[in-house]
Length: 258
Image (tube, rainbow, N blue to C red; front, top):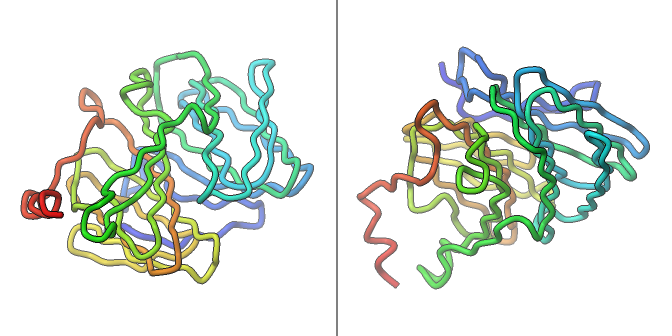
């Protein structure tokens, strides 16, 4: 049976695995994991066949790669934008925690080589969608770090969505043939919401994960009082990169009525 939604935990090494490429239950074609780092701790990542994105979720870290260093500080993933390092295969990245921190690492196979890019909050788009529609219940903030438009050499997409309290995102219902992973966070641990994948519904909690196969719609909602963060990650398909969404035509009228 396909594993569409999960509640992964950190293991004794401080690693939370979200998905693995080749998983027979639900292959997202990506390796994605979240790493906890205590103040002063260092982790090193390098993959011989895969590109890699290292995203700061919370805390303060130093990124080191190819003789370069950059710092990122993030106390709120709701209010503050992302710091993310994107590198091609064989590039070694070291992160050193200046405070207790968490980073998300997304990887997929890519034979292309490309120049490493360090993205700061001001380098990412920060778009608001759905404003003014249906009492702003569709209003959400979408931060795109990289996608096919600015990184056509990549086999991945990485970004973040802030679903405003009591509202919806990934709405109207839509799908695309490329697989997508959502990693959810709440700044209050009792926060909750709901994820709909195709005809199935799941309770969103802090730290939960959706693994969305191609071709399934995936709208989300969050409870009043609880703005919801999720990192969204898409894997392009060979000869078919993700560039747009395919809306369920039954809901097109929603976007046309104020």
